[in-house]
Image 1: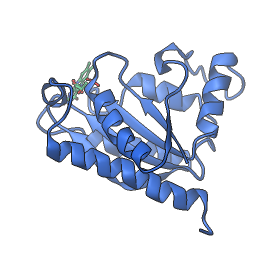
Image 2 (image 1 turned 90 degrees about the vertical axis):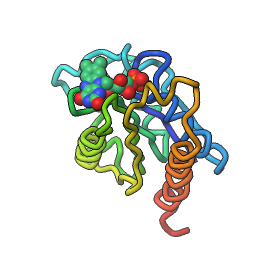
Image 3 (image 1 turned 180 degrees about the horizontal axis):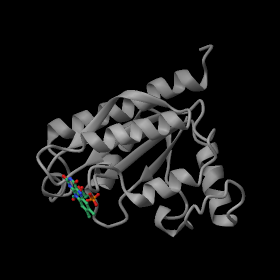
Image 4 (image 1 turned 45 degrees about the horizontal axis):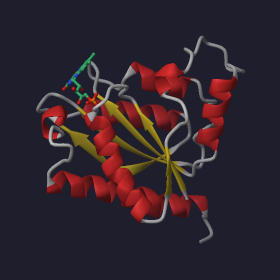
Length: 179
Ligand SMILES: Cc1cc2nc3c(=O)[nH]c(=O)nc-3n(C[C@H](O)[C@H](O)[C@H](O)COP(=O)(O)O)c2cc1C
């Protein structure tokens, strides 16, 4: 069971990355092999409308997505949606790249309202790419402030851990439908 992590934030430290790592720790404890792309998503070229080859970096990224059974996608909310870096990475994938894969989504925001719009945009886009999306999701309001100590409070940590565990549990079912 391979879980690939795609993060829409490029900065460090990143509350989104902390949230993802919290969920991924639980995924690893549940038996998954957790991977990050070998190249930062921000170093990939822009999708220019072609659907074919984009060189070695994109070929490697596509292969890393293809080798995963499940994907955790995290993004900061930027003007009510997910980040452009993440959208570009998804645009570089073929339209069937996520077929038969389970995706879980988590998003962070500065505001009190959280990142529900970002989660809904992510669901919409990955469904368009034929992914299954886990019903559970995590929206994190006031994310940077809550991540300032380097770990989230116990309640949020638990919520993220359950997301990681469910990604592995249901990702396994999707990977082995006869099991
Ligand atoms: C261009 C831009 C747009 C943003 N738009 C929103 C927004 O619409 N709503 C919100 O609550 N926060 C917004 N934020 C704040 C980020 O969502 C928030 O700081 C996020 O947690 C950053 O995640 P990171 O620490 O992983 O980079 C925006 C930040 C940037 C840079």
